[in-house]
Length: 278
View 1: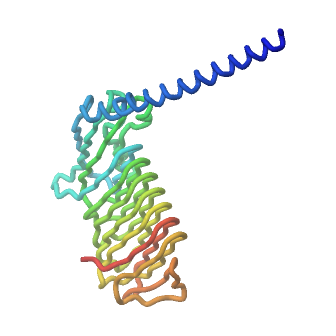
View 2 (view 1 turned 90 degrees about the vertical axis):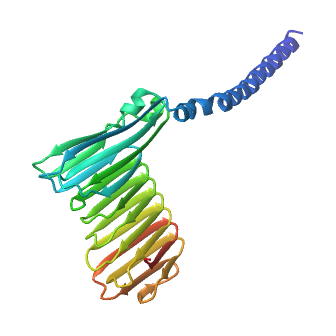
């Protein structure tokens, strides 16, 4: 009898454990569906901590503008201000003050190196404190060399006249340029759309790990093209190209005009398209 009673007790205990786990899972899922959207969406929708912050600094004595943020979309525009100011504006929506304050833009100057740095003090991950949404807009003299880094966000640059270097880990890149002497832009996850205008000299490298690349050029450009994808296709949608020895569905080397500029396009997963600019 004692043996049978032991089996019965064990069976009852196992059944009780199963019921607790099963019901606990259902309660957890229900709570997540009920509370989760409020926890992460409600503060942003309600604007619990929201601000539009701007700051500016003179660029005299600087040759380089270096922009670095841990999170947020970054849009850079040319400034025609005769005072040669660099202006940063941040539109921040956060679920609480620590997350909000972690991304306020700040200028630091290193005149000895000729570098003006703009950064958000984003060393504290917003996920620890709550939800966060931030967009940076920057205006500066376009003859400064531009270097932009953000780990989570898209980057767009327009009208720049000096060399441009961009890196983002998770976000797209959008460029509207003309006669910019050199461009190096890369993202780990995101598409790249670049209107490069007239290319006559210099080196232009656009790379993405996961995403498509679409480039627009002036038909009057003089450029050598090296475009390759691991999974996708390479399409030349403008006349005048002279194909090189390498021209397959996934890799093309070609030249346009005298081939004096170099355009290198790389993606692991995505298609590449080169077309005439409007």
